[in-house]
Structures are given as C-alpha cells and as structure tokens.
Length: 388
Image 1: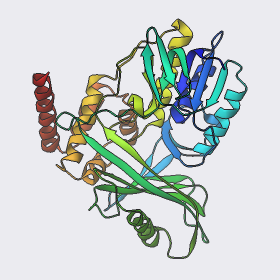
Image 2: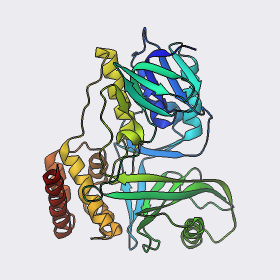
Image 3: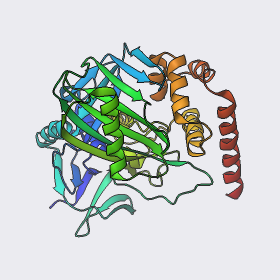
C-alpha cells in the first residue's frame, strides 16, 4: 500500500467527512493524493446535528427537516420566535455518512483505509500517521482524533453537555411540524442547567431530547425519567412508541486546542470547533473545513485563523458563571431570549456579531453577575501569566 500522501484525514466522523466534502467542492484536490483513515466508515444513525443558517448549506441534499420558527419556554412563559432570515435545520448522521461516502467513493484522488490510529506526530519535515502496523506520511495531517490535554482548572473551565433523546411516535397528532422547540426549561434544575428540546418530524413523530450542562453525568434512568415526565406533562398521556434512541457527551470548555505543529491541523472537537458556551459544533466545523479547503485550493498551504479574542472571552465568562453556579443557566438563557431578537442571538452564537450588537445584548443580561465572572476571568489570566 502507498505510504506517502499529500493530505491525510485521520478520523471519518463529522469533521473528517466535512473536510473531504469541502476539499472536493473547492476543487482543492487536483493533482493531490488524499488518504482518509478510520476504524469504520459505517453509515451509523447515532447522532443528530442541528444548526441554523440563512442560506443553503454545503450539505443541503441531506437536510432532514427545517423550521422557520421555534418555541422557547422559560418555565413561566412560552415565546414563539420567528427566525427569518435564518432557518433551524436538522441532519441525521446516517444520511450525512451515506452522502459523503458516495462523494468519497467517486473522487479518484481520495483513498480510504480502515485501520486503527495509534498517533499522529512529526518526523522530520513530514507529518506521520502511525497505525501500529505501518507509518504513513503526508504534507498535512488533519486529525479529529481526541487529544488528551492535562486539565488546568486554575486557568480554564470544564463542563459537560450530556444528553439522551428519543424519537417517539404518538397515536394522536401531538406536534406542530412547522415549529421546533429550541429550549424548554420546564424540568428540574437540580442536576445543573437542564432543558428539553423537541424537533417535530410530522404531527405524530418527534425527537425529544433531554440535555444538561454540568460537571458530571447522571444515571441512565434519570435521563429517561426526565423525558417520560416531560412527555406525560406536556405532550401526551396516551401510549407512544419509542422508534429510536440517542445519547452523547459534548465537552464545554475554554481550554484551547493543541496547536504545536504547523503540519498537524486538529479538526472537530480536537480542534476546538465546539463552541464552549453552547456546545454547538456543526456550523463551526463547516466553516473551519471551508477555510482549510479554500486556503489549500488557493495557496497549497495553511495559515491558522484564530477566533477573535473577545468571543473566547465571552465563552469563558459564561462557562465561569455556569461552573461556579453564580447564576442558574435557566435565568441567563431566559433573559437572553426574552430581551433580544432571536436573529441577534443566533448571530452572536455564530461569533458573527459586531461590538455594538454585543454591547446591546450584554446590557439586557444580569450585569453584576457577568461583571463578577469577568473579573474572575481576568484574575485567572493574570495568575496564569505570572506562573509562566
């Protein structure tokens, strides 16, 4: 087997496949040899990815459902939020895997390899992927393989977004297909910031997902109990079928990703493409993949484009509030959506607002608590720099 490539994509999950897709779409592969390596290329339906956008995405062919408006329930009142010009969209992982597998199979520049990935490293001027049985080199390696970084709790915040979801089918029409529920806080907050969201597929079918932001996960039975209670109290007391289950854990942190080597580019969660304060990743993975593909198409090399410092600071401040329990997350998000236009909030969560928009948004929040968290963030930063 060939052991030298121009680009190696280590990991064929969302990040690796998205990069391959953008490389194809941006015509960045002409005259290049690309390897995608992972243990499996199975078309698993084990994840649901949601995001918002104004225009059609690169994966418009596999959008499963989309909504022009959403509900937000503070626990006391329900808000109906029109999103135009945005739409909230849902992609099932099996559809995305199937779609990208077809594109990969029909791109002659791309080779796939089912293999273990022991590590990626630099050896001389080459980036090297070690499978345990062979070493494969490339000019660049794009790795979404998780990297274990030593925690630095004196400097950074670490929370988990953990969740369990059911797709259920009811006998009577219980759902409004044109309206999703983005956040519903009508659930106990004793385990941390807890909410449910509802993504209707039709009048009888929807994904109902229970999500918590906290330091630790909870027993499986506790997730299921919360979903059952929500269905009984707010959806239907009649019997229903559970068609599908999913669960997962997403890190929420402001710990920066590994950036030691210029020729090893980390992508996905390993590359810091999960927004620390919200857990949303699909949009940021697509943007990162597009930037890489456009740079390779234009120049054949990568220049890192760090996130503007103020957005990193905003994430850190919110994580500080949630981790130190300075204010319940329910109160923060409820105030945010009660006092601001949803379009501004979505733009802010995409790191695309300007300073004026951000100031107007912050003036609607709990100023004393956010100031306390901002001071704590500044003190952490100073303390860290003094140790170096």
